[in-house]
Image 1 (cartoon, helix red, strand yellow):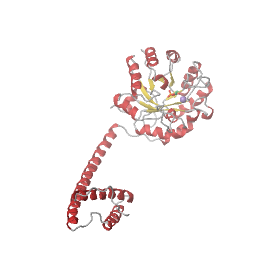
Image 2 (cartoon, protein in one colour):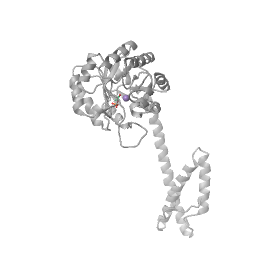
Image 3 (cartoon, protein in one colour):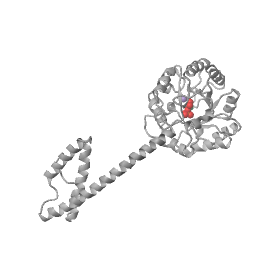
Image 4 (cartoon, helix red, strand yellow):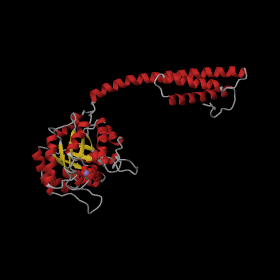
Length: 372
Ligand code: PEP
Ligand code: MN
C-alpha cells in the first residue's frame, strides 16, 4: 500500500500539518468578501493546506441561504491569493465546473447529495474531461460503498487522475450522537479496494457539533487518513449555514495541537511484528488453559467414581465454598478481578457437576446451588 506521502502527491507543493496531513479548512459558505478574506488570512498564518468555501449550497428546504453564487468565486480566489492558499469549493452541476475553471479555483469537490446520483456525477465527469485539477468525492448520503466507488470510477474514466475521497459520514435511521454516522468500516473497505485513493475525513459534517470534532479527527488519524476537512468561520455563531459545527481559527489551532497523528507503514510493520509475537504468546497460554481444564475435568470424573463408590453426593457445599474463597484470594493476588474469578469458577463448577452426573448416569442438573 502507498504511504500518505505517496498518496498526497496529487497535492504536490501544498503545505501540510500534523506530520504530512492535508488540512482543508474554511467556512461552510462564503458569505461576503470580508468574511472569506478575514478567515483566509487567519488560516494562511496557521499553514493549513487548502482554503475551503461553499458557493452553491445544497440546502434541505427552499428559502434557506443557498450560497452567494458565482460572485463568491472571485472573493474566494482573491482571499486565497492574499493568504497564499489554494482554494476549493463544491461543484454539483457542469455550470459550476465552468465557473470554477473561469475563476481559477484550485480544487473541486463533489458533495454527498451529488454522489448519490450517477447522472449528476457522470455530467460532472464529462465536463471535467481534460481538466487536471484535484477532485475530491464525498461519500454518498446513504451508506452505499458501491455508489462512492462508482463515482470515483466515473471520474477516472473521464481521465481525472488526481482523485481523493472525503468521508463525511452517512445518514442512517439509527439514533446516534452524530449528524452523519461514521460507519468507519465503509471507508476502510474503500481503502482496501482502492488503496491508492487518499482518504480525507470531514468531522464537521459527521459530528454536526463542535464538541465532537476532536474525537472524530483523532479516530481518523488513528486510521491513517491522509487529511481532514474542517469548517472554520470568523464568527461561528453568526454563520449563515452549519453554525453549530463551525469553529474559529483559534479553536482550529487548539484542535490541531491536541491531535496525535499515528505512525505509518514501516513503523506499522514493526507494530505488526510485535503484535504477532504477543498473539503467539496468547495462543500458547490459551492452549495451556484448555489443557488444564481438560485435565481438571478428567480428575473430576475420577472423583465422581470415588464418590459413587462411597455413596457421597456429587455436590459438596463446603468444598465449593472453600474453592471459591481460595481461588478468589489466589486470583486477586495476581491482579485478577474477583467477579471475573467468580464467573469463571461458576462455569467450571457447573461443568464439573454435569460431568460427574453424566459419569454416574444422573440427569444433569441445570445449575448447582452453591449457596455463596
Ligand atoms: C459542505 O461541505 O459544505 C457540504 C455541503 O457537505 P456535504 O456534501 O458533506 O453535506
Ligand atoms: Mn457545511
